Length: 521
Ligand SMILES: NC(=O)C1=CN([C@@H]2O[C@H](COP(=O)(O)OP(=O)(O)OC[C@H]3O[C@@H](n4cnc5c(N)ncnc54)[C@H](OP(=O)(O)O)[C@@H]3O)[C@@H](O)[C@H]2O)[C@@H](O)CC1
Ligand SMILES: Nc1ncnc2c1ncn2[C@@H]1O[C@H](COP(=O)(O)OP(=O)(O)O)[C@@H](O)[C@H]1O
Ligand SMILES: [K+]
Image 1 (cartoon, rainbow, N blue to C red):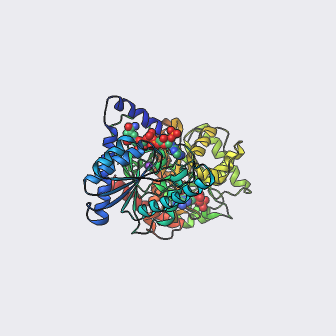
Image 2: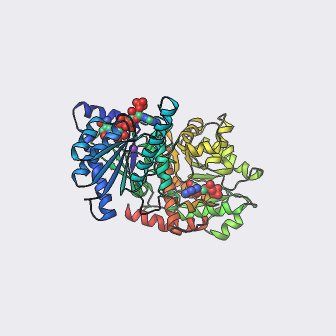
Image 3: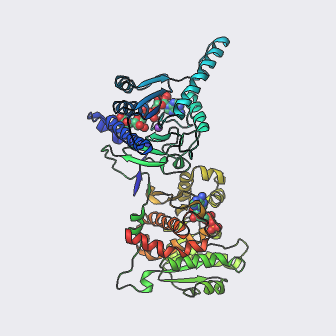
């Protein structure tokens, strides 16, 4: 499991070590230098003679870059530090200079100039300086982004740093193999370290070497897409407490998946009740029931008017109401289908009285009671979440939910009590007691009609299989929801690696995906 802690949690954990004189920056910068050495070896087969440009900001993040630069210089690397702030880390600067590295102040003349003529002169020479800096960075083997880390204020890069990064990103395209490899120090500079925002311009990294612990921003969109591969350097911090945000890996999902023992029978394995689809939209009923069957439910009951189509595709499904361990409510339920909405409402009533876990999706979301227990899982996409929150007095649009998925999923959990699984390229899950997950397991090809119905059925089977545990321990529910998102994403890859997908193929890939996952886990 990949765990992340907020900047405040990381700083608090660093404090006692710094007070005890533990050389955290030396540890961080030597690990950073080690990562750059590996990149140089991979890129050019040798370290000596490699060209590294450091982008250096005003704080300790720049200090890390400068100390790493000193180390690299001693290994025979040509190191140029571009100082993008009036003052940079004193010891780091001295170490780099002692090692024979070059340091160059960069201004772009746009700030602080006095009279007009002087300002124009400064602007001209600043522009030349900036242009030369961009050329040097674009021509390097590796650019080390040490402008800002934990100390980044909201709003992103400003001033010279912003202008340099803008010009550099225009000059280099990520797919250009001749362009520099970008290694970010701790975080890509200017991201929202704790919320994954990217308010201003950010230099996309190929690799982020992060210190002490991953930060939530490295797991959340949009910043996660700017971080590249994330390498964690352990600094020996005692982080204690709960992480802010986690990401499940295959072994975690395997641990959470119920595997039948020899005494299993279909009822003990969990019955899923599915209220989905209508005669006009039977596809959602077929996909949700199929996914529940293929994910290994003991039995699937279908409730609704699309029974014929469901049976034509999945003869294993039983029609009609009966006892279930978990519900899947809402896929393909149209707003004008009073009969199916009535069935959803009565299932939800049962959920409140008897307490089974339930997945509340699509057409069931607007039938959600005011408050529900955490073993009710909402599975909206951003538009549906915006609608649900707007109906409860929050003025929020789809784009805002997409920009800050964790924040709005948290709000929806607080408003409803439900566990909230917010779908998207990164699927964010929020549950009780601060439990939160960000899963990025799916190919973008999964953004296809019906894929959400498959997720709902798959999650329903998992909740039915672990219904007692889910009710007893509500903090387990978000982990189960995250595991379902992981399996769903992996099934997308499995169904057609790197190619187009249709939802039926994703459902069909679930058994093999689970087999592979359980064999590895
Ligand atoms: N503690 C340790 O020993 C260890 C720390 N480590 C390293 O230290 C990093 C944290 O260092 P840090 O606290 O110095 O913060 P950092 O991100 O370098 O920047 C702060 C400076 O930037 C400025 N500034 C902020 N936003 C700005 C903006 N938008 N535009 C312009 N300026 C802006 C801000 O100004 P101020 O807000 O004070 O006005 C301040 O001057 C951490 O990420 C890790 O790399 C590791 O070595 C492990 C051991
Ligand atoms: N860009 C993307 N990359 C990966 N997965 C995505 C992307 N966009 C959407 N998804 C996933 O595809 C599924 C789409 O679900 P949904 O929007 O409910 O579609 P539908 O209602 O048609 O079934 C969700 O599981 C979502 O997480
Ligand atoms: K950085």
